[in-house]
Image: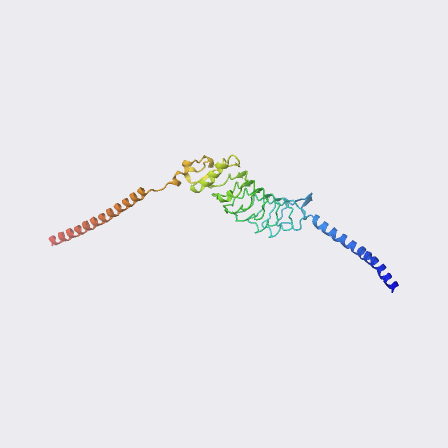
Length: 301
């Protein structure tokens, strides 16, 4: 019995060492596979120091399987039309995303849910027509958004930039915007630069809140509003946005007093009475003419 126990206890460590030796190559292979996967560079792209550059490669779709530690991704100057949902899920280290000069018309919902560190986003020179509500949801670290040179851009939803408390630079220049809701900007407490020139602004009553906001922030918010021009109405066409004064919007604040309403009511009453009297006189005149004409016919007979 003693010999048997001695053999069992003596053999145990040897067996464990043998198992460890067998597992070691497997673990090394797994580690190498993980390391290789994280360092893999897509075809037609160059990868260096956390930077993946796939720009100018005439790509019609985004490249799959980027290095997991990618921090700067450039897909600029391609022909990309769509981005698949969840494309950025595995790239939590991403800081810069350059999508300029493509054919994008929209972004999938929730694209930035895991992009917690994304700071710079360039969507310029694309085909966006709307900036929808929560388009940048969860991208709370964004510092700069460039949406310039989207000629089809007609509308920015009031909740488009909700939650972007760190956004400092916003470029909406050279698009098709005729109106911008003040609500879209009021939720950006640290905004420093706002570019809005090159849009066909309609400088009617709806423009006054935005213009007042720009005037109040002009000392701490750099803007190209001096370059922004009015496209309508005709009386201010071509006028610089900042050339408009409070006098320009005076007609927007005209209010009627009780005396005004009473006067309008009195005029309406008088016009109504005059109309009835006129119709009555015309009726009498027509009737008299008819009788006179009939009497003349009877005399001739």
